[in-house]
Each structure stands twice: as structure tokens, then as C-alpha cells.
Image (tube, rainbow, N blue to C red):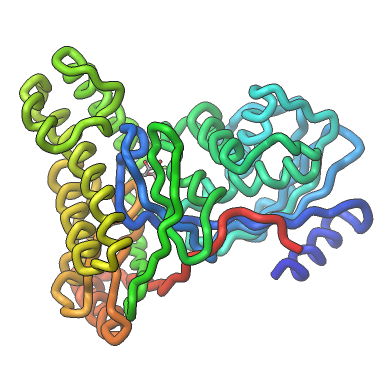
Length: 389
Ligand code: GAF
């Protein structure tokens, strides 16, 4: 892959000079959804699919981008003088945002760069292609400009900052963190309040992680995501009148039940309930996994889905069909929506001997009920962003 991309890079931009190649993965979250902006825990892992990038510094202040995924757009040219988001800039708003964010943090770039990227994360699947592009760009800039003090955690935070302030999505830190900090065969148990984390080996005995792509993405995604955040913030402010907390993640279920009546709106109360219960479920799920209790882990995944469907209301008809069909299959230990919601993917833990039946039956029922061919990915957990040899 890298050799092919390098060849194309040289055809596009010419040979010579120091060329850097990097990769940043997409992610799947096993449990801990919509907790990362509520000071809670998440448990994502990096995938082996993601975004590849090849880049070289230029002598002038121009920046040129090319994506193998958007060949029709050709080379998109901009400059260090033009770090503002625009509709016309399309996908290049993500890498531009990363340069802009680093400049805001005090890094300065005197020379521009040429960059070529290729991503193998299915389009619109909710497996964090944009976060992987942000992390990839951060790592490429670190390597090209010798930003030795820029850590991988800072690259993740910078990606989130650019997404929030340049690209207008108020996301939490989970996706960028998973892409930057992932580790082969491990999920990351991250406390988003402190950014303390630990790697937990994902030992599933004879079971596999299967991602099912619903192939739908409902258009309210961005605004509904930001609405959920606002509802949680409203709930938190009301709770702060009756208890001393800095985030919803500081409460356990029992503490929440004692104070929940301070939240005046039913909707905000449901959102806060999800955030509190999901955080506790995540802590329990990680403990279960460490103790080899895979079935308990799966049941917590199922409970996570129900909460996301009923209290947080970020599922949709198509995703519910995929999950409910999955639950009917005996070898399925757990299945839930993963990521921001309103479409995208489900994640399931499926016993090896049931994987084939899972794909057939879920696929058939989904097609019957929606007319859509779902896609299945039996995934491996990979490393976080890295420079390619
Ligand atoms: C999206 C966001 F980008 C993440 O920060 C996280 O909030 C997730 O939705 C929901 O858990 O992927």
C-alpha cells in the first residue's frame, strides 16, 4: 500500500526531498457511548483500517492536498495564509484545521507541504475517518517539522480542538484518542475527566468482534449530537445546585437516583441518566473483561444499547433492526450501536462458530426489512497512529 501511494505521490508532486509516510487508524468503541463529554469512561479500540498519508515539506508557503478517495477533486491547493474553513474546501477542512489548531497552540510553520492521503474506512460508517485524518495530519506535521515536544496525547487533543473549533462538531476526545493511542489487541480504558488510561487486552476466547454497517446515516447527525451535549450540560447545571460535582461522570447510579429530581426537564433527566449509568456500565464491563467474564461483558453491551435507544435516543430504526436480529442468534454474546449514532455501525461479540450464521441471518432480515444490504467486517484491533517504515 505504502509503496503504491509513494509512487503516486511522486507522479503528482515530483520526486526528491524527504518524504514521510504515516498511518492513523479508525476506531470502534466497545462500550462507553456519549460519556466522553460527560467526564465519564470510554472503552474504544483502534482498528487496522484507517488513513494513510504521504507528505513532503515545500520551500514556499503553499499547501497541496490530494485524496485517492476523492480523485475527482484533483489536487486542492491552499496556503498557510488561508487557514479558514469553507464549504469549497470539502475534506481538506480536516487537515487544514489541524494546522490552524497547532498554530493557535503556538507552533509556527514557515513552509507549506504537499500531502497525499488514502483511507480504507468505509465512507460515512461512523468508524472515525475524520478523527483518523486529524491524527494522521498531526503526526505528519510532527515528523515533517520536527515538533519533538508534541506528544501523541497532544496530537489527539489538537485533533479534537480543530474538530470543535474549525469544523464545528462539538465532539469529545474518544475518537482522536483511540486513533492516536491505540494498541494492538487491546482496548483503551480512558477516563475522559483526567485522561488517565490503561490498556486492557481484549481476550474474547473463541469469539470475534463483528462490525455491521447499516449503510444509513441520518442527516440530523451534527445538530442532534450537539443537542445531546447541551441537554447533558443543562442537567449538570441543575444537579450542581444540589450536589458538588464537576461532571455527570462523578455520580454513580445510587447518587444519581437521590438527586435526579433536581433536573426539571424529563428529556434532560433521561440524557443524564444514560450518561451516569453508561459510565458505571463501562467500569463494570472492563472489570468483567479483565476477569474473563465475556458473557457479562456482552450483557452490559446489550444494556448499553437499550439505554442509547430509550434514554439517549441516538439509535434509529435500521440500527435497532440490526441489534435485535443479532440478539436472536445464540452465539451472540452482545450487540449494540457504536459511535455517535443515528445510523452508522453496530458492534457485536460473536462466537467464532456463529459468525457465518450471524452474517447470513442478520443480513437477510435487514435486507427484508429495509431493502439495504448490510456490510460486515470481522475486525482485528490494531496499533495507534505511527510512522511507516
Ligand atoms: C462521536 C464523537 F466524536 C465522540 O467524541 C463520542 O462522543 C461518540 O460520538 C459517542 O460516544 O463519535
